Image (spheres, rainbow, N blue to C red):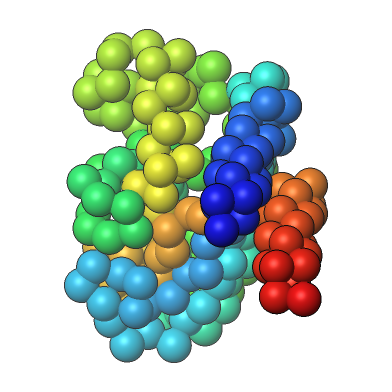
Length: 197
């Protein structure tokens, strides 16, 4: 039993250490819908957002698709940081009133952009002020909020000015991390089987 716990502890520590050892490209996704809004709504709209952070180049790539909205798009951005993970509301962290070039006046669309997060223009000015006063401090706060599940992608429309569809950004596990977890679990299973034979 002690050996199994040791393997579990080792696997867990490696699981959490592996993503940070070579962190450069970190991928997050969000499923966008009305039930994720606060308060939730009955919008038939859906969408998905993929946010890829490069913490070496200090860029954030956005790939968003959405359809079926009840109102026409008026704005889209990332909000950060909620008081608790995966719940609540927060102010706008990124470009206001909306991402540059985001489809406006439509109920469906796609969007791709690459933001230089070292530029103050990538943020809501009030977010910069509230988080240290520089683009560097705003970037640190936003990247930390995203990593702690305290940020969400939100699409606002004429029917729902406070937001028609949104989704919290969640980290996508790296294949190496999943393989490491599988290896650790296989080792525990092997040890358990040897004990029972």
